[in-house]
Length: 173
Image 1 (tube, one colour):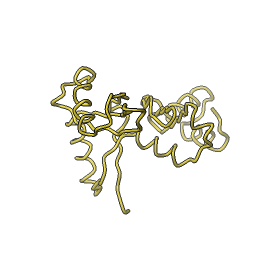
Image 2: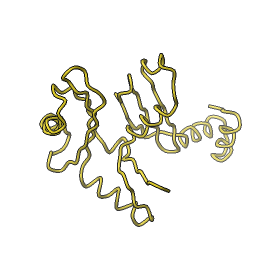
Image 3: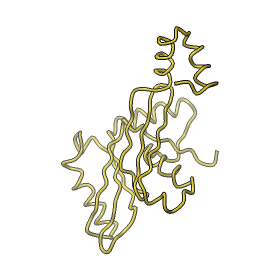
């Protein structure tokens, strides 16, 4: 690949949307650090954070901030390198879903409305919501397709393999 981008899972990141009374990037950077002081669920010196400016209205900037524990990032990268993955960019699932929604080329009337993406994986489900192009929610639920298989298996006396096949072949939930 030309570039390798790895997203931190939603349950490893805290996200904040801020409206700051400046358009100056250096002032925004200092304001983000100040604003995060009271919001972080962990000590500031244990955190790494970054932000994206989504837009300006007058002299205000709309800023999306992501923060994670430094040890979480180190652990994540520690898994990637032995697997032969050398990421060029570390991002968040929120940013990845936002990019996906932008690539969908939704009609402008829909872009103004809230958009919800539900990704039901094997072991986890991720919920991502945005409004007017700005992420407002990215949460992970420890429940996925495997749990559907177990429920089908128990309810209809099927093997887990048979319930997986039935689910896929018939959309049977």
